[in-house]
Length: 420
Image (cartoon, rainbow, N blue to C red; front, top):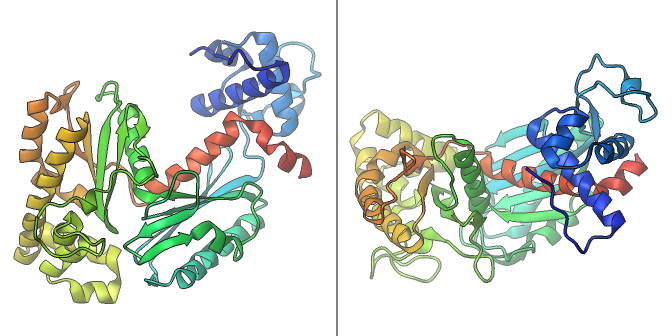
């Protein structure tokens, strides 16, 4: 890897850019000495020494060896410092909260990526009333902020992850059929109920964040080769998904691209809440499958996540109603996936939510479609696979992405660091 600096940058810009290069490199490799940083980034050793001194002064890096005396890291120390370096948490945290039907997930890390909070809460999420749901979210956010403050950490940014259409760069949920929302500014509603965060509140679509997580896992898997294109489809809160095209998430003109749950798979089928007839979510979504499996009562008593887990357990045990419900849903998913494949030509198709447990039922016909395109295998790896990440994947990814923004441009944090 070599460092490339845009020609338009002036001297101070170059220094700030290179601070981010060093910090990002340390985040990627874990620990490194100054010579290794120079080799890994392409920066000259003298510049690395100066940049590391600046990052030490800001408290953004520290000695990786806890037995190393602090004075070994002093910029004024004579001779070549022996200590290996790592990203320091600096007592700053990024907090993420994700909500779905009957579930709230909380996740937080410090700037070094060390996990500070990781919780799953089963709650009855109010449907149709944004204020009531935001009250629930604010309660969990405020609780997490207090808990982190008690450990000496300051939350500098909040990431909110939810199912819904969100124009890129805004906190406006133009529609979330699962919650009965239309035109709800979730960021504005939350801002008056939670503390002010130095770097604000960001809102992301849950399926897009989960797709990023799966894409990252594929890239880290040595058996998959070079991955640039994939699609991710999940069924948990409704049916959602994300498409990675040429290494980037497909947003569309208004940030609402790739809604597989609202593909029409049964013309003249049941009416969907979106206004169309025969959408995939109506004939094969969680509500339809649980109803067909006779689990409506279980869902009312225990909530949607537990009901889907029960569906998986019953099907695995060979219960006829559960197996029949899944077999019926599978035919509709095969249609949808085959259409998505011939439209986007992905290298991989990743199935999430309860679909992950039944990927083998969806594989045969879908794989034939991939084979026609010559993409049924990539470097010998099966192109259709179950998600390898858990329920927290989307919120974890949102937090990680915000953390990487800070590492890439650490000067953003200077006002907060100097105020500590």
